[in-house]
Figure 1 (cartoon, one colour):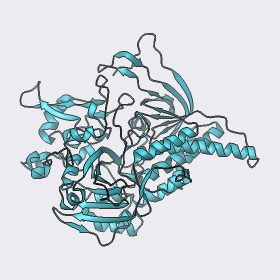
Figure 2 (cartoon, rainbow, N blue to C red):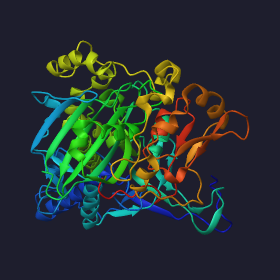
Figure 3 (spheres, rainbow, N blue to C red):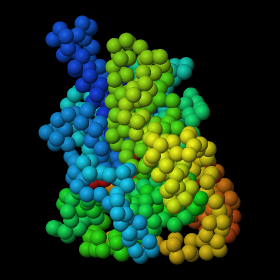
Length: 575
């Protein structure tokens, strides 16, 4: 895609005091906290309780690539409300959309047809007192609270390039709109904006495409564990009226996952709805890992099928989440910038909780941004206090307690149980501390023959249950439920390094894992027009739901996920 502008067209430049890239829980909490702290500061000055200058009106901007706040927000999700209570103490009075308080929780082990309930729910799975929520709805509400504070939210604007002044981040450029497939301007062409910012905060979520570039350029992950990820998919199932009691949380291990580590979750919410989801580790060796298929198989288990009988799937989605934890976190600050939330690997993967950590990190970044405003200084020295705030908060307490969890569970569920138990006793240490993650998820993939033998895709475990358009779906049917749309005459945002590698190496050895792990049928292999008897990759980029698994798990590291034209992608409503 070319960035050359038509003759006579220039990019508008906007000066911003604080620029937040990403309108999720981290970014919105950050924006709200900045505005609130400025209000408190100025009120104290007016009251005479603080001897200082008032802070002049600040230009605070949140960039969101989705068509609206919440459109790209996707999570399980069970919310620990501690950060929300701190940020907006009267959140209940303001109508915060919390689906149900958790009333009961349980853990089951699923065999092929059996279900065994653990007599005691392990502490990491205690959720009573937390809330089952829709992250999409929560973020829409947070966006409304931000707008009430005068914060500028720009939906449909995708940040594509970080701007530098030496080693300092001085803002971003947003992507152009109205280019055709070849990158040429169309009649509706709109050039992207140049946003010059005193402080830039990256809150893009998992595998943030812009922060990935910044991190590489500034070497922000030097000395850190490799990033590792999980892929999650979920559905919302509408059940007959009067059949579902809201507030139940159930986690399961075992079936249907066989060659990979992961688990499932079941939540019940008002309106007689069941949330059913599955999460799988992406450092799996299995080249045929397909979380969408595994979710469909999950519904064939008697324990689940009895629960959802008579229901109809009404929503679907998928995304990745960072799993490396404390030792995979990048350097959190630098000249002119900070990074928070999922972009900074702030997820407790033992509890599958990250929303409250994202919110708290955004709040800590906000406090630091206000300090920078007061000092008129966004240097690395001033912004370093952000990391100190993280270390003094529950973000470190919770992430440090599970700092070795992913590394241990990757050994296998049963093999890891004694070691995980020891970690619980020793505050996360276990037998050895600071267990290394020295692999990329892409490089753990093994050949089909090594994992599945001669049967490969024909193996019974790799068969998708027949779609009925009611409870069981193929991928295209599931994608329809996400409301995903992209301009079909726009540049492909999924950048393929070499089509030859797909045809000559990846398909013969791995059977093209992208075809399997993508939850949205973006990738398919078609008979090659170049070489008889082989297959070429076709990328159906308009199906993309922005999970970014392809950027993470392609065994040849041959796919680069970049942001599409702003506003494209899923339109999540209930997820």
